[in-house]
Image (cartoon, rainbow, N blue to C red):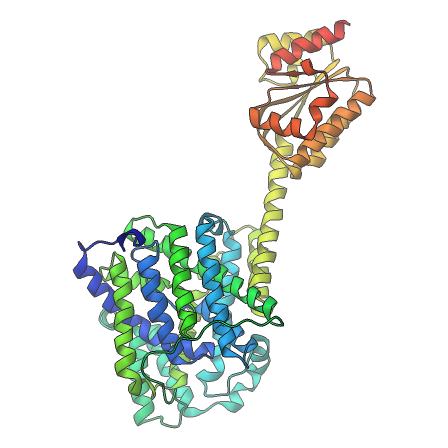
Length: 541
């Protein structure tokens, strides 16, 4: 078993036990709240925390991480349950398939690529998810009927005051005040969400008993349900599975980075994806909602002493014991109390660190962040991340193109460039303006193609054009075609072209395009000096 467990050790057993117990106490109210918010029910939330929490700890790659239902995963699961409202088994098939995709991500070593998603995009969709949670919980906070869908919930906001129930609203506000303003001296001993759950439930039983409660919760172990597929829903199943897999991967790996910074360790991202995938497959198999690495529970676990997978696995076992023994008590928990707890969760998910700096960060990043946030709330996560990433990529290409253009030099004489050696400068002087050298530094990519063509095909009084690749680290096919176009234009003008200084990788691309076939074999030289010496011989003819 130890070969599956990254960081397993019995040396920190006391800290792991205390960390696991503390994380379970924090996870209890959140698991119930996320289960209710998803539409699958409180028991589905609890078993999501149990199954994902246990198997992600055992098979994952972040020793101190605690996994379970999270705000982002719950938001997506809510949409899945709404889409497959007539067939809940298919909704949990999506959860299983999402886990399969996560395992594939890990096996294909995608962990390092997920970390390349631009920060404004991550900030935008995390803040968007926080806004979604807040919007969806406003109705149950005041005892009103929940509205399906974010847009419909937004449109229904003006009417919430008319539907407000005093008992439910009072409980929701009490819970919200506790989770927001609980003094640190008290929260050290009992987490705010758990205290809000206990106090809110007691007040609901004795003082505000007209508020809607969770009601009867089935007890015992969940029954297994095998996955089912439908040809008509196949596209939707794949789409939602990929959303869960992608979001769960990002959510988990971001939490892994936080765990690394606190514990001064290094997680294994691909193994973590495999562990999360196994957890979500088993969760879907038993009708539980999906999960991911949970930041707050992980930090609580670490601060309490948890350092190995024992703490995460123990947290799941403790929750299982709670489910088997406390089901009757959970039936009295008011919906408004859970809504108050989730409002704070949604607030915490919003990237306030970035929001507070919107007036100082680059405008391009602000545009990407706000676009991603808006699309997350009003459209869907996949569209938001895709559009945000494309915007960020295009911006990066533009900046790279500007950098490349600034590094391009057209040298027509010895005084045009200080980097020439004395011998090279002497050869330029002898050429008397009949030799032009084109030099570029760094990568030559498709973003700089237009600038390359303009510089190389510009009408110049020259007899020899030298293209110097000495400082080129990389060239793609688009830039190679631009070089080919310049060589062809020079030949039409009866000018000679010499390529020099190419590295092995650059020369391979140039030859694969066929640029070398347009030139005599000796017109490709190793150094700039050899190219200038050759140009001198050409001019003498």
